[in-house]
Length: 400
Image (cartoon, rainbow, N blue to C red):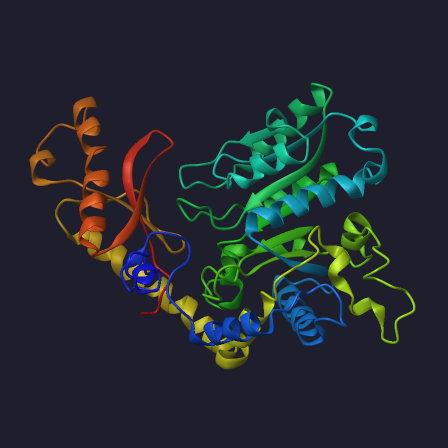
């Protein structure tokens, strides 16, 4: 055990900035100890009464913060799965026969997302048989936000080609740049064309709890579904991910239920509406909502809000410090918790910014990261992106 711990990456370390999660929340950790000891599976009330009620309570609060009057939801093993659930649910809503008859009786479906979307959207299209060629990637502006006018053009183009648009996935907090798509404008287009609007707020959804920063998600109440991962900014511990759906007509259950008679008997002595497991494609399911519930109960909404606000104050501080220091260059002003920058070593600072400069600069981030990892001093990510050579992406989450 000591070797496992010694040679593992300590994601709770105060200088771990590598991913869209970091730090440790001790209330969530205590909740994980409890669920690991009890070993529940969250599908029926008879097996998991407390954790099912906890999940329903947490989902209701999350729905309230989105701004819906009602809705439904389910906790899933990852935002990628939530995005896939939403895509499949949208297809089922427009073509309910697909559940029994399969793909043969439906038209050529296409969906739309931004160039900056999470790669899980493309994976979901592949997994669901829609096909990656039927994913239209809409142009984004310099800050990484989807351009609504380009979305409108793509929809018209798809229809002209004889395809059937059905689904738009907007992003609230992109993985690299931390950009938020203009949800209100995108919602206008989706309403005009009767398309399902899904918002992948896996990263940025937690800003809804901050009165100062919730404006980043202005218009999210108009979404048909939302993916939101409390294990990211809110540090609820991996994995803690919810799909939230505006529909209150039991669409989730209609889409995913298989009515297993050995689990979901109709003559139980309690209210069988608490048997929510048939809303999931899983059978066995972890009590992930409990981690978030425990933290929320302990800190309160104010405590969670302070956590978000503090992280974004630190982002602003770091961005200002980068601008002051020789050899550091921001790609753009951060909108959320992603700080993207180059480090330009002394040997390149007087060099003309031509092809040779960018070629040499692209080698710098990998070398520095290798040295930091071998020393064990810090972890932060780097990547090339949209024609820009390798740059660092530092993500600020942990209050440590």
